[in-house]
Image (tube, rainbow, N blue to C red; front, side, top):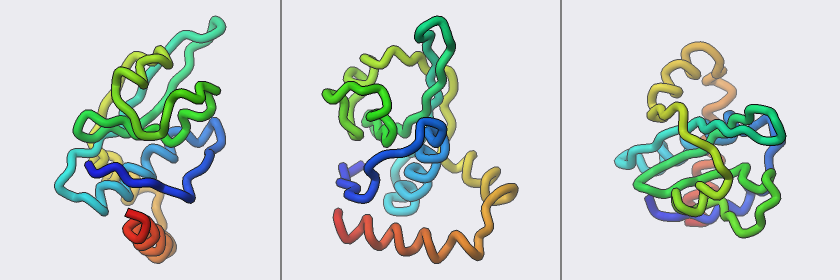
Length: 129
């Protein structure tokens, strides 16, 4: 997937990791439907606790909009698996964005309210690409 710079994605709450990954994956799939977009869930032990983290993968690239929460300024939002492995998360689940889309749109999304917002965001992303 062509690397895009998203000027308006600056930071997310720590608890918004899955939602941020899903949302980014959804938008990316809409912009580049020919790409395989996957949501990946990872797990690690940290300070005696189990932590989970989510990110988006496409064509060997990792897109992790919430990587800044780990305080490692050397990691970028768009990177490679090798760079991302520094965080110590082991992959435990991987799903195509399409599987999330069907569940989410059927159970949670208010399409009438979301569609106009999504359209504005996609137009903004395409404008910066």
